[in-house]
Length: 324
Image 1 (cartoon, rainbow, N blue to C red):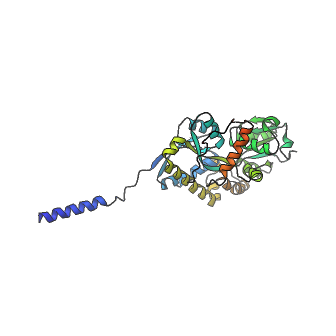
Image 2 (cartoon, rainbow, N blue to C red):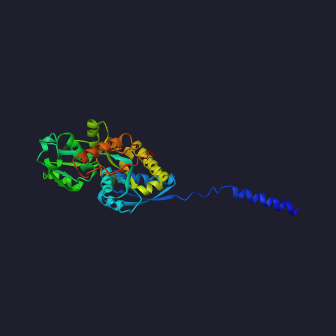
Image 3 (cartoon, one colour):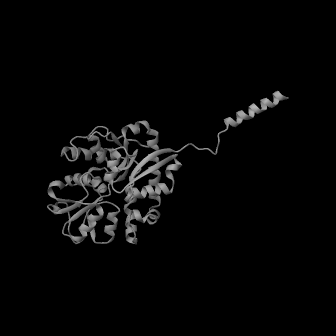
Protein backbone atom coordinates (compact mmCIF):
# COMPACT_ATOMS: atom_id res chain seq x y z
CA UNK A 1 0.00 0.00 0.00
CA UNK A 2 2.82 2.37 0.93
CA UNK A 3 4.63 1.69 -2.34
CA UNK A 4 1.53 2.50 -4.37
CA UNK A 5 1.07 5.83 -2.55
CA UNK A 6 4.73 6.75 -2.95
CA UNK A 7 4.62 6.02 -6.67
CA UNK A 8 1.50 8.14 -7.01
CA UNK A 9 3.17 11.04 -5.23
CA UNK A 10 6.20 10.81 -7.53
CA UNK A 11 3.96 10.89 -10.63
CA UNK A 12 1.98 13.90 -9.32
CA UNK A 13 5.15 15.83 -8.43
CA UNK A 14 6.60 15.08 -11.88
CA UNK A 15 3.46 16.41 -13.56
CA UNK A 16 3.52 19.57 -11.48
CA UNK A 17 7.16 20.23 -12.38
CA UNK A 18 6.52 19.68 -16.08
CA UNK A 19 3.51 22.05 -16.25
CA UNK A 20 4.55 25.69 -16.90
CA UNK A 21 3.34 28.32 -14.46
CA UNK A 22 0.94 30.32 -16.61
CA UNK A 23 0.90 33.16 -14.11
CA UNK A 24 4.63 33.78 -14.62
CA UNK A 25 5.87 35.63 -17.70
CA UNK A 26 9.35 36.28 -18.99
CA UNK A 27 11.08 39.26 -17.52
CA UNK A 28 10.93 42.15 -20.05
CA UNK A 29 14.17 43.01 -21.83
CA UNK A 30 15.26 46.47 -20.70
CA UNK A 31 16.69 49.00 -23.14
CA UNK A 32 17.60 52.63 -22.56
CA UNK A 33 16.14 54.73 -25.39
CA UNK A 34 17.04 58.35 -26.15
CA UNK A 35 14.72 60.65 -28.10
CA UNK A 36 13.73 64.28 -28.63
CA UNK A 37 10.66 64.93 -26.50
CA UNK A 38 9.09 67.43 -28.89
CA UNK A 39 7.76 67.32 -32.44
CA UNK A 40 7.12 64.18 -34.44
CA UNK A 41 9.56 61.95 -32.55
CA UNK A 42 8.09 62.97 -29.21
CA UNK A 43 4.60 62.37 -30.60
CA UNK A 44 5.51 58.84 -31.75
CA UNK A 45 7.06 57.96 -28.39
CA UNK A 46 3.96 59.16 -26.55
CA UNK A 47 1.74 56.99 -28.76
CA UNK A 48 4.12 54.07 -28.19
CA UNK A 49 4.04 54.52 -24.42
CA UNK A 50 0.30 55.00 -24.09
CA UNK A 51 -0.49 51.93 -26.19
CA UNK A 52 2.22 49.92 -24.35
CA UNK A 53 3.58 48.72 -27.68
CA UNK A 54 7.06 47.80 -26.33
CA UNK A 55 5.56 45.72 -23.53
CA UNK A 56 3.56 43.69 -26.06
CA UNK A 57 6.88 42.60 -27.56
CA UNK A 58 8.45 41.83 -24.19
CA UNK A 59 10.53 45.01 -24.10
CA UNK A 60 10.74 47.65 -21.41
CA UNK A 61 12.20 50.98 -22.45
CA UNK A 62 13.97 53.25 -20.02
CA UNK A 63 13.24 56.59 -21.68
CA UNK A 64 15.83 59.37 -21.86
CA UNK A 65 14.20 62.50 -23.26
CA UNK A 66 16.02 65.57 -24.59
CA UNK A 67 14.83 69.00 -25.63
CA UNK A 68 16.80 69.12 -28.88
CA UNK A 69 18.74 66.85 -31.27
CA UNK A 70 22.14 68.33 -30.35
CA UNK A 71 21.92 67.38 -26.68
CA UNK A 72 20.46 63.99 -27.63
CA UNK A 73 23.30 63.18 -30.01
CA UNK A 74 26.00 64.42 -27.63
CA UNK A 75 24.68 62.13 -24.90
CA UNK A 76 24.41 59.25 -27.37
CA UNK A 77 28.01 59.28 -28.55
CA UNK A 78 29.10 59.49 -24.92
CA UNK A 79 27.23 56.22 -24.23
CA UNK A 80 24.56 57.62 -21.90
CA UNK A 81 21.89 55.28 -23.35
CA UNK A 82 21.68 52.24 -25.65
CA UNK A 83 19.58 53.29 -28.65
CA UNK A 84 19.05 56.67 -30.31
CA UNK A 85 15.58 56.99 -31.86
CA UNK A 86 16.29 60.25 -33.71
CA UNK A 87 19.81 60.07 -35.13
CA UNK A 88 20.43 61.68 -38.52
CA UNK A 89 22.77 59.65 -40.70
CA UNK A 90 24.93 62.76 -41.12
CA UNK A 91 25.41 62.81 -37.34
CA UNK A 92 26.48 59.15 -37.39
CA UNK A 93 28.88 59.83 -40.26
CA UNK A 94 30.45 62.74 -38.38
CA UNK A 95 30.68 60.71 -35.15
CA UNK A 96 32.36 57.76 -36.91
CA UNK A 97 34.83 60.12 -38.58
CA UNK A 98 35.84 61.14 -35.04
CA UNK A 99 36.29 57.54 -33.91
CA UNK A 100 32.94 56.84 -32.24
CA UNK A 101 31.80 53.32 -33.22
CA UNK A 102 28.11 54.04 -33.69
CA UNK A 103 25.86 52.74 -36.46
CA UNK A 104 22.57 53.71 -38.06
CA UNK A 105 20.38 50.62 -38.41
CA UNK A 106 16.83 51.65 -39.42
CA UNK A 107 15.17 54.87 -40.72
CA UNK A 108 12.28 56.46 -38.80
CA UNK A 109 11.50 59.77 -40.53
CA UNK A 110 12.01 61.15 -44.02
CA UNK A 111 12.96 64.78 -44.53
CA UNK A 112 10.01 67.10 -43.91
CA UNK A 113 11.97 70.36 -44.16
CA UNK A 114 10.81 73.13 -46.50
CA UNK A 115 12.17 76.55 -47.51
CA UNK A 116 9.53 79.18 -46.74
CA UNK A 117 9.16 82.87 -47.53
CA UNK A 118 6.46 85.42 -46.81
CA UNK A 119 3.56 85.12 -49.22
CA UNK A 120 3.99 88.67 -50.53
CA UNK A 121 7.79 88.45 -50.95
CA UNK A 122 9.27 88.75 -54.46
CA UNK A 123 11.35 85.54 -54.18
CA UNK A 124 10.32 82.55 -56.27
CA UNK A 125 13.48 80.42 -56.49
CA UNK A 126 16.79 79.59 -54.85
CA UNK A 127 18.53 81.86 -57.33
CA UNK A 128 16.30 84.81 -56.38
CA UNK A 129 17.55 84.46 -52.81
CA UNK A 130 21.27 84.87 -53.59
CA UNK A 131 22.82 87.33 -51.16
CA UNK A 132 19.74 87.24 -48.91
CA UNK A 133 19.38 86.27 -45.26
CA UNK A 134 18.32 82.64 -44.81
CA UNK A 135 17.47 81.30 -41.38
CA UNK A 136 18.43 77.75 -40.50
CA UNK A 137 19.51 75.64 -37.52
CA UNK A 138 22.97 74.58 -38.65
CA UNK A 139 24.84 72.44 -41.16
CA UNK A 140 25.05 69.34 -38.95
CA UNK A 141 21.26 69.05 -38.79
CA UNK A 142 19.27 66.89 -41.20
CA UNK A 143 17.74 70.06 -42.60
CA UNK A 144 21.11 71.72 -43.02
CA UNK A 145 22.86 68.98 -45.01
CA UNK A 146 19.68 68.36 -47.03
CA UNK A 147 19.48 72.05 -47.92
CA UNK A 148 23.12 71.98 -49.01
CA UNK A 149 22.79 69.03 -51.40
CA UNK A 150 19.44 70.11 -52.83
CA UNK A 151 20.70 73.63 -53.50
CA UNK A 152 23.83 72.17 -55.08
CA UNK A 153 21.58 70.34 -57.55
CA UNK A 154 20.26 73.79 -58.54
CA UNK A 155 23.74 75.31 -58.91
CA UNK A 156 23.67 77.17 -55.58
CA UNK A 157 26.27 76.93 -52.82
CA UNK A 158 24.35 77.94 -49.71
CA UNK A 159 27.56 78.49 -47.69
CA UNK A 160 28.78 81.10 -50.19
CA UNK A 161 25.66 82.44 -51.89
CA UNK A 162 23.48 83.17 -48.83
CA UNK A 163 23.81 84.99 -45.54
CA UNK A 164 23.01 82.09 -43.22
CA UNK A 165 21.58 83.05 -39.83
CA UNK A 166 21.47 80.22 -37.29
CA UNK A 167 18.76 79.97 -34.66
CA UNK A 168 16.23 77.51 -33.22
CA UNK A 169 13.09 76.79 -35.26
CA UNK A 170 10.56 78.70 -33.11
CA UNK A 171 12.78 81.79 -33.27
CA UNK A 172 13.19 81.41 -37.04
CA UNK A 173 9.42 81.75 -37.49
CA UNK A 174 9.38 85.01 -35.54
CA UNK A 175 12.41 86.43 -37.35
CA UNK A 176 10.79 85.74 -40.75
CA UNK A 177 7.52 87.28 -39.57
CA UNK A 178 9.35 90.44 -38.42
CA UNK A 179 11.15 90.73 -41.75
CA UNK A 180 14.59 90.18 -40.23
CA UNK A 181 15.06 87.16 -42.48
CA UNK A 182 14.15 86.73 -46.14
CA UNK A 183 13.49 82.98 -45.91
CA UNK A 184 13.86 80.08 -43.49
CA UNK A 185 14.23 76.34 -43.64
CA UNK A 186 11.96 74.62 -41.15
CA UNK A 187 10.35 71.22 -40.64
CA UNK A 188 6.97 69.74 -39.77
CA UNK A 189 4.82 70.49 -37.87
CA UNK A 190 6.08 74.10 -38.08
CA UNK A 191 5.49 74.07 -41.84
CA UNK A 192 1.81 73.14 -41.54
CA UNK A 193 1.30 75.74 -38.80
CA UNK A 194 2.84 78.48 -40.94
CA UNK A 195 1.02 77.56 -44.14
CA UNK A 196 -2.30 77.40 -42.29
CA UNK A 197 -2.04 81.15 -41.58
CA UNK A 198 -2.03 81.93 -45.31
CA UNK A 199 0.89 84.32 -44.78
CA UNK A 200 3.69 82.09 -46.12
CA UNK A 201 4.51 79.97 -49.14
CA UNK A 202 6.99 77.23 -50.00
CA UNK A 203 9.83 77.83 -52.44
CA UNK A 204 11.39 74.40 -52.00
CA UNK A 205 9.86 71.48 -50.17
CA UNK A 206 9.18 69.24 -48.57
CA UNK A 207 12.77 68.18 -49.13
CA UNK A 208 11.98 64.48 -49.40
CA UNK A 209 9.77 65.16 -52.43
CA UNK A 210 12.24 67.59 -54.00
CA UNK A 211 15.06 65.06 -53.64
CA UNK A 212 12.88 62.35 -55.14
CA UNK A 213 12.14 64.55 -58.18
CA UNK A 214 15.87 65.03 -58.77
CA UNK A 215 17.27 61.62 -57.84
CA UNK A 216 14.42 59.09 -57.77
CA UNK A 217 15.03 58.53 -54.03
CA UNK A 218 13.29 59.83 -50.94
CA UNK A 219 15.45 61.67 -48.43
CA UNK A 220 16.30 60.44 -44.93
CA UNK A 221 15.81 62.65 -41.88
CA UNK A 222 16.44 60.43 -38.84
CA UNK A 223 16.60 56.85 -37.68
CA UNK A 224 17.58 54.29 -35.07
CA UNK A 225 21.23 54.08 -34.08
CA UNK A 226 23.34 52.29 -31.48
CA UNK A 227 26.93 51.41 -30.75
CA UNK A 228 28.30 48.81 -33.15
CA UNK A 229 29.19 46.53 -30.23
CA UNK A 230 25.64 46.78 -28.83
CA UNK A 231 24.10 45.80 -32.19
CA UNK A 232 26.48 42.84 -32.54
CA UNK A 233 25.50 41.57 -29.10
CA UNK A 234 21.78 42.37 -29.36
CA UNK A 235 20.71 41.80 -32.96
CA UNK A 236 17.40 40.05 -32.07
CA UNK A 237 16.65 42.91 -29.69
CA UNK A 238 17.42 45.49 -32.39
CA UNK A 239 14.87 43.72 -34.61
CA UNK A 240 12.31 43.93 -31.80
CA UNK A 241 12.88 47.67 -31.55
CA UNK A 242 12.27 47.99 -35.29
CA UNK A 243 9.03 46.05 -34.92
CA UNK A 244 7.95 48.34 -32.08
CA UNK A 245 8.62 51.35 -34.30
CA UNK A 246 6.71 49.80 -37.22
CA UNK A 247 3.70 49.07 -35.00
CA UNK A 248 3.74 52.66 -33.73
CA UNK A 249 3.93 54.06 -37.26
CA UNK A 250 1.12 51.77 -38.37
CA UNK A 251 -1.14 53.14 -35.64
CA UNK A 252 -0.32 56.79 -36.46
CA UNK A 253 -0.97 56.28 -40.17
CA UNK A 254 -4.29 54.56 -39.50
CA UNK A 255 -5.48 57.13 -36.92
CA UNK A 256 -3.87 60.48 -37.91
CA UNK A 257 -6.75 62.73 -36.85
CA UNK A 258 -7.20 60.94 -33.54
CA UNK A 259 -3.48 61.17 -32.77
CA UNK A 260 -3.14 64.86 -33.70
CA UNK A 261 -6.23 65.82 -31.70
CA UNK A 262 -5.19 63.77 -28.66
CA UNK A 263 -1.63 65.11 -28.45
CA UNK A 264 -1.70 68.78 -29.58
CA UNK A 265 1.19 69.69 -27.25
CA UNK A 266 3.62 67.86 -29.57
CA UNK A 267 2.60 69.67 -32.75
CA UNK A 268 0.77 72.85 -31.65
CA UNK A 269 -1.71 72.14 -34.46
CA UNK A 270 -4.94 73.56 -33.06
CA UNK A 271 -7.12 75.26 -35.66
CA UNK A 272 -9.17 73.27 -38.16
CA UNK A 273 -6.92 74.39 -41.01
CA UNK A 274 -3.79 73.39 -39.09
CA UNK A 275 -5.23 69.96 -38.26
CA UNK A 276 -6.28 69.38 -41.88
CA UNK A 277 -2.81 70.23 -43.14
CA UNK A 278 -1.25 68.06 -40.43
CA UNK A 279 -3.41 65.07 -41.39
CA UNK A 280 -2.23 65.45 -44.99
CA UNK A 281 1.43 66.31 -44.40
CA UNK A 282 2.56 64.42 -41.29
CA UNK A 283 1.69 60.70 -41.72
CA UNK A 284 3.86 60.25 -44.88
CA UNK A 285 6.91 61.44 -42.93
CA UNK A 286 6.81 58.40 -40.63
CA UNK A 287 8.37 55.39 -42.39
CA UNK A 288 8.50 51.68 -41.65
CA UNK A 289 10.88 50.32 -44.29
CA UNK A 290 14.30 50.92 -45.80
CA UNK A 291 13.14 51.03 -49.40
CA UNK A 292 15.97 52.73 -51.33
CA UNK A 293 17.00 55.05 -48.49
CA UNK A 294 20.41 53.42 -48.15
CA UNK A 295 21.14 54.37 -51.77
CA UNK A 296 19.80 57.87 -51.16
CA UNK A 297 22.05 58.26 -48.13
CA UNK A 298 25.09 57.11 -50.10
CA UNK A 299 24.39 59.68 -52.83
CA UNK A 300 24.00 62.50 -50.30
CA UNK A 301 27.22 61.55 -48.49
CA UNK A 302 29.11 61.38 -51.79
CA UNK A 303 28.03 64.96 -52.57
CA UNK A 304 29.14 66.18 -49.15
CA UNK A 305 32.52 64.47 -49.42
CA UNK A 306 33.05 65.83 -52.93
CA UNK A 307 32.91 69.36 -51.51
CA UNK A 308 34.52 68.40 -48.19
CA UNK A 309 31.45 69.64 -46.35
CA UNK A 310 30.98 68.18 -42.86
CA UNK A 311 33.14 65.12 -43.69
CA UNK A 312 36.23 64.67 -45.88
CA UNK A 313 35.62 60.99 -46.56
CA UNK A 314 32.85 58.51 -45.93
CA UNK A 315 33.73 56.41 -42.88
CA UNK A 316 33.21 52.67 -43.22
CA UNK A 317 30.29 51.07 -41.39
CA UNK A 318 27.97 54.06 -41.03
CA UNK A 319 24.95 51.94 -41.90
CA UNK A 320 24.07 48.50 -40.53
CA UNK A 321 21.03 47.75 -42.65
CA UNK A 322 18.61 45.70 -40.52
CA UNK A 323 15.21 44.94 -41.98
CA UNK A 324 13.43 44.01 -38.76
